[in-house]
Image (cartoon, rainbow, N blue to C red; front, side):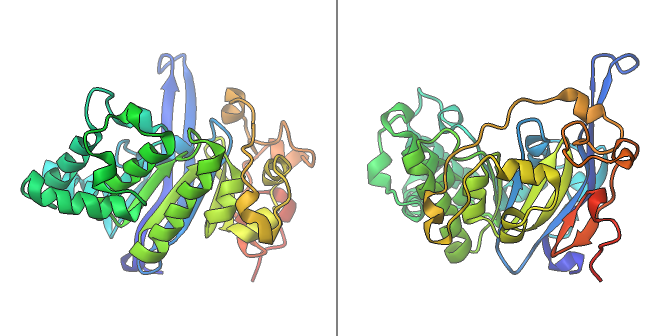
Length: 332
């Protein structure tokens, strides 16, 4: 696939932070040599999954042009995000790439009516010249998420349920008519009974509105249900990636296997019920600084070489795995 055929092309992106002083502090590689791409003509849901502290949110900031990579490049529709400097170019990029955040109650001020945000979005992104014209655009976006302007008019955020407000967040993101939604833990603050409604909404947007979605989560259950492809992240690295059914039905990397053990086995006829969240523990900063494989300290199949050198990407069984266990088994 050439660059022209790609909606998004993430090329060996790395983001380095310094904790403490530059001389005596700790160097933390929050995103480490990550690459993947999305097809321009085939919308999909691509999931970034991993425990807290795996680098998912930092990578999201890079994709939203909220953070500059230390090295590598993020290319959207053929343009390196590093070249976007002017307000005009930034606004044009924001029209096409919209975020949906974790907590909808933090997205909206409790002192402002919900519809005001929607009207402002329509006007600021050039979809309407005034509130009267914007009402049509806003109502159309709300209908895409199963709501209407009448339902939210004159209501404050606290007067809506968490599920309703998260759907309003998605509607707001849809008003500029984006090509890509970046959803960072969008169902973690929503009641379990409403999670499937939200994730099914992303599938509907992919299928009916031709919108691609990057879905960021620690919850492999919803990821399994809605994703086309998945990338498993560990301490800034993508350790396994490929079609979601291949990666989660038959995980190869020991870390992916550990994650899968945290959730029940999926039954194809009951995927909608496979939604129990996983508790994956806390960040271990020492793993970021570890020489060799970041999982070596917890891996049940660790070898001496794992503690010495970071494993290469190996193409095997329809996915990419960063693990010495599969060296010599590369697909032809």
